[in-house]
Amino acid sequence: MQSLKGLLLKKRSLGIPRFLPHYRNLCTHTINPDDDDELQLQNPVLVEGKAHCRTAILNRPSALNALTTSMGARLKKLYESWEGNPDIGFVVMKGSGSKAFCAGGDVVSLYRLRNEGKMEEIKEFFRKLYSFMYLVGTYLKPHVAILNGITMGGGAGVSIPGTFRVATEKTVFATPETIIGFHPDAGASFYLSHLPGHIGEYLALTGEKLNGAEMLACGLATHYSLSARLPLIEERLGTLVTDDPSVIESSLEHYCDLVYPDKKSVFHRIDTIDKCFGHDTVEEIIDALESEATRSNNEWCSSALKKLKEASPLSLKVSLRS
Image 1 (spheres, rainbow, N blue to C red):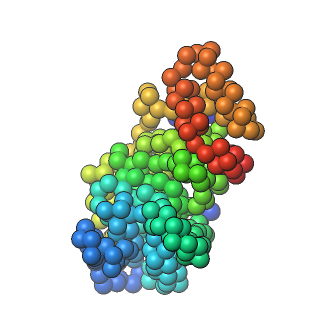
Image 2: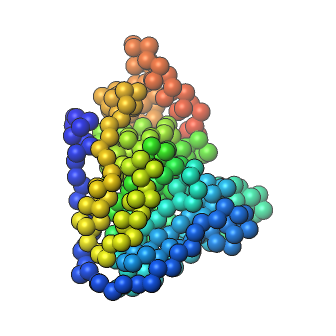
Image 3: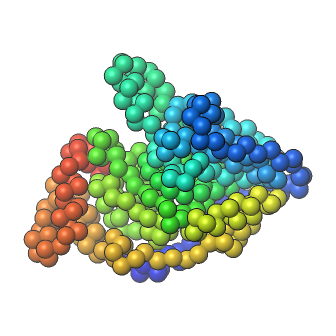
């Protein structure tokens, strides 16, 4: 078992190809996010252009920047055009407002569509968003996601497959799909299964939340910064004329900090998580948690059990298998 410090210091090679830098200055064109409801409906994805990068801004702050079909289509079109533009070296994504990066897919709209019997529109929702998330995961240019605030479900799907993820003290990560009868999707079966030990199984089944420091500890985030310093990071990135991931990483590290999870963090329970969530079936996991709760009178075990028993049994089985 690796130490917590060892997990924090571990570097993961992302295999991002490096491209020859292009030193052509571009005119800066900036559209600032606006919380006005009408503007959100018209422009759910805004764009900022600076020097050698483009920034996509998820612009539905009143809905915690939840993703819609039209947002997925627009993002895919933008990203494809930027990928083929030699004057653009890298891409940044952030959320509008101070509460959320992205709370995931807009399940309220999906619920309404289902009640109206519009199944083809529901299929199109997943088709558009999943194809965009795949594009992020295979993108040929460096990608920086600024995860300031709620980052759940599809919000993780449009950010974690990218090159860099900057978490803050406001970041709240979770894959809570089993609570609504679904399963962690949007690439979660890949990145959760690559977390240390059996933390991925624990997060997938319970829907438990992680903060920014915990995301850094397990590799879900690549950098951590106080939210007050984000304008400095964005300003620095905006001056770069590069497509070299190492240059971007150095710029991020200039304003970012190494932090450790606090004493109450689940990362100080890694041994217990591995013992209870390392089994092949949901039934065995529940039995292990019940035995551990009886043996140790551990409140954490009781809490995890409660979450499992409130979730959809079928969702738990599908999630564990995936």
